[in-house]
Image 1 (cartoon, rainbow, N blue to C red):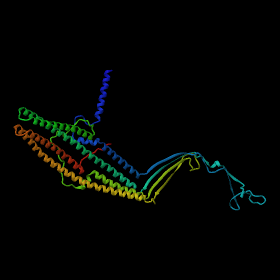
Image 2 (image 1 turned 45 degrees about the vertical axis):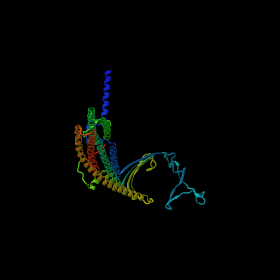
Image 3 (image 1 turned 60 degrees about the vertical axis):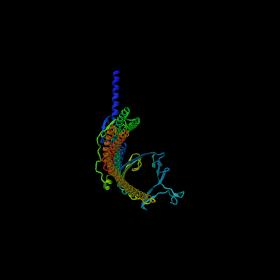
Image 4 (image 1 turned 30 degrees about the vertical axis):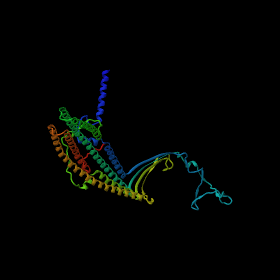
Amino acid sequence: MATRRFFLALLGLWAFGTAIAQTSDVAEGSVLSLEQCREMALKNNKNLRRSAQQIKVAGYEKDQAFAAYLPALDFAGGYMYNQKGVSVLGSDQLLPIKTFDLEKKGYEFNFVKNPVTGEPVMVDGKPIPEEVAFLPKEALSYDLHNVFFGAVTLTQPIFMGGKIVAMNKITGYAENLARAMHDNAAQDVVYAVDAAYWQVVSLKAKQKLAVSYVNLLDTLSHNVSLMVKEGVAIKRDQLTVDVKLNSAQIDLTKVDNGLVLSRMALAQVCGMPVHTVFTLADEDAATIAGASAPIAGSYNMEEVYSSRDDLRALELGVKIYKEKENVARASMMPNLALVGSYSFSNPNMFDGFQKKFSGMFSVGAMLTVPIWHWGGNYNKLRAAKAQTVAARLELDNAKDLVDLQVNQASFKAQEAVKTFNMTETNLAKADENLRCATLGFRDGVMTVDNVMEAQTAWLKAHSENVDARIDVYLCDVYLNKVLGRLDVSAPVVK
């Protein structure tokens, strides 16, 4: 029994571990490249998944609009209970009858005549017929307590004022707009991933610098302590170095914490659990790739406009509002439709009153002509035109902002390259300055302050170089984004 329980416990732990592993596509300690991070972010981003559903919605609405071209088949039926039946007569009736008169060659009423005068006998001013037909009330009484009825109707639009055509164009534009917004959101996700990715790489490099800086100060502190014992340095020098060392250790702790938080931020953007342990392929890279393409001084803005998904969405919005004008105009035009139906009921009156189902076919046309609505339809058209103008102005304003955005991104990218080149030059100088200061301190011609200044300058030069390297790449990515050149393959989640 104990063995069985132990086996079941192991099985449960294995199942639990499998479930946890399936919640993330990344194994602990995996090495992730930038492309892998992009793919995971595009796959797991909830906003992209929501916009993918919006594409589906737009596609369904497009199919729905197309269905308006086709005939519609509907069924309507019901049941009604009536408290009373229907009777055509209020009471039994006596109807006078006619006989054929050979002399007059026609039908004449036969009345009761006075045998003396031969005149019809009058009662209440009316002659009394000799013969009558008896019509009982029940003969024209109908049982309508339980009534069943129904109809199958076929409606085929012939001319709806252009409304159906306009709605199909609108839904087609709406589907393309949803795709454009999805692609634009994907570019935002990629840029966010790149920023988080290179933030981790930058902090990792700065962590190495901080460790090297602490080691330099620790070595300097050890050397100064020996010099204090030998009497060639004073206690003040030892305290100055120790204070600087403590400050460097605090900075190293801050960098360590920042690196952990930046990894969490990258994991969140990629859709992984924030405590996932992973490393990046570029963390220990000696160099970082620069700009993917030469930075031009000017660009063909028409090509930029056609490449930008957000501008394409605004252009589609203008087209949608233009078609809404046609929808509003259709409300002022005649509508013609062909209608066919088969109606039935129980009881029915097609062949006398019968308590059974029977029906008939009907075919016809229905024409609706708007005549007077106190300007309501016309004002609806004017409102649609105003919306079109507003959308076009919004598009023009967006193009102006894109012009400014492209120029700023280009200028910033060029500035980033220049800054990087200058930091490369400063890096070599800072390395040489630290080497000379270290040798001078050993030879006794440099003070402790001189060495710490050289170490601080070395740290600053290397830190600025790391920032400049990262900035060159991020500026290049941002420039490609504003130019509409950022290659993004955003999967549409099913």
